[in-house]
Amino acid sequence: MNDDEKGKRFLELIDEQNNVQWNIVAKLSALISSKWNSTELQNELEELVNKHTTITKELNSLDENSSIL
Image (tube, rainbow, N blue to C red):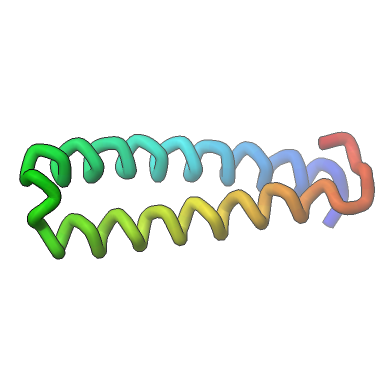
């Protein structure tokens, strides 16, 4: 992957990560409002955290060769 492709992918991942973060905040707020009694919200939050972790790992892998990122 050349630097232009890496840069484009980086921006896509940052946008996706930002959306996931906002979803995490929304789910966490709803879970707190439910007094932590929603298994469905807990599962959704766990999935979002896993997705965030995957995105972060991919972001970090883009710069393994000390590219422009």
